[in-house]
Length: 100
Ligand code: SF4
Image 1 (cartoon, rainbow, N blue to C red):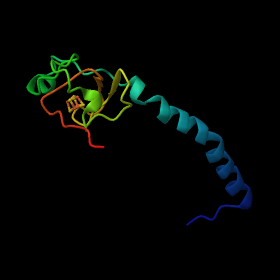
Image 2: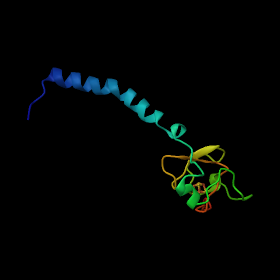
Image 3: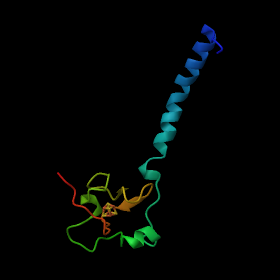
């Protein structure tokens, strides 16, 4: 295995440190805000009767165990629809009461 000179080691370490913020920012920019919204006409959404406006007065995505965003958020990620956002006021047949 090739040994790095001290100069090569310092330069490679400096490069990694210099690039770290851009890697961090890039990964952050692909966050929940950039995810597409679930289309209620998507076959999986239809199979689960997903709607953007819950037909129930008590059961919403925001009080579902599978919703992973703030309770007052308009849109958020859901474990059932990975990579997509569901409406905070939405609902589907997989709804499970949030514990706690
Ligand atoms: S499982 Fe259904 S009700 Fe629960 S957050 Fe996801 S889409 Fe909303």
